[in-house]
Amino acid sequence: MTHFSVQSNHVHALVEGDDVQSLSRGMQGLGVSIAKRINRVGGRSGRVFDDLAAHNRMATRETESAVRDHSCVTSRTGASIDAAEEGPFHPGELEAQVLAGGGPPGAGIRDWMTDQHRAFFEALPYVVVATLDGGWPAATMLAGSPGFVSAPDPHTLRIAAGLDASDPAQRALTPGTPAGLLGIDLSTKRRNRANGIITAAGDHGFTLDVRQSFGNCPQYIHVREVKAVPARVAPPETLPQLDGDARAQIQAADTFFVASAARTAESNGGIDISHRGGPPGFVRVDGSTLTIPDYRGNRYFNTLGNFVSNPRAALLFVDFATGDLLHLQGAVEILWDTSEVRTFLAAQRLWRVRVDRVLRRRGALPLRWRLLPYDGRSAR
Image (tube, rainbow, N blue to C red; front, side):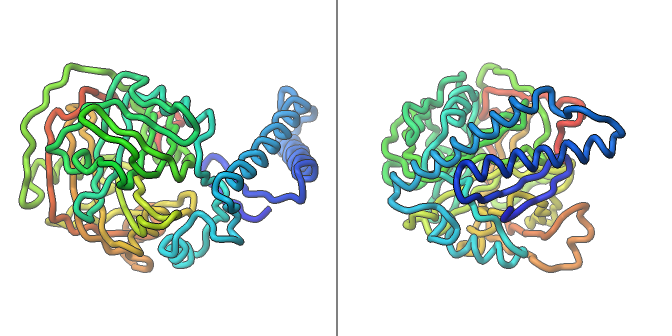
């Protein structure tokens, strides 16, 4: 085992083996050991799983699939994504991992999409998008009927959505530029990321050549149901600073999205768009400065690593009840070691954004979400 991370309701483990057979045997042995310990603690006997043999067969198939996936990455790029080599992380991400106490090997990042990720994107009624707006990251959300995102092959995503030129993030969707996509289903807490280069764009959408693809765990996602409503878009509002409505929206939010960008000309750099969640009010507002807690995660540090190289951020706050979008941009400061972190429950570090660009688009989304009661799946 090369790395493990204990979460509140599950464990992430990265395991290496000399070959498929030894890795499969090792995982089967781990399953047997865990089953024995569960039986001992629970004062029971017998199989913990309904069908341990079937479980082991599934583990073998998944191990073989992972090895095939790694071979496919090697054949397309000419290089493995093993951490001992160049790896999927740029210097800013590696520095952030060191400052935070260490990071993972990163073998979950591919330069192609699995069939499961392709099907997931195609089923979504909305995606979150990051681009570059005059050197600044920009973030937005696009919506459509399920199927408006298509994945005709493992390297391509096509988004069929009318683009709004008043939105800097959408205006920047031009061929040859980097972009990042976050597919997130708030009703199931599933999310996948896809970063790459735009190969085609027009009034009715764009095409992304995927260069990085990976999933994220479901932590900190609040469960919501979505429904479509008629679009009622109001003229965009450009503000010189946060006004009372903007501050109230931020202070009530339990979710936002953050875009960052660094080393966009390099194969392991580019644009990234990520989800952030916490209890309502987890983002603190002091004038035009936001203080944001950073919780335990996958330790890739894509966002904070981009900030190390390029301390600029774009934040997107969605009003799930009205469809309003609040777009913010500002300079970032990461607080790796500060006593203030103790005033944020469970935070490991903090980062601040000094907001100096504000755009509000009321009714921008033809969607509305309903927050579901806590049922054990909500953010934690």
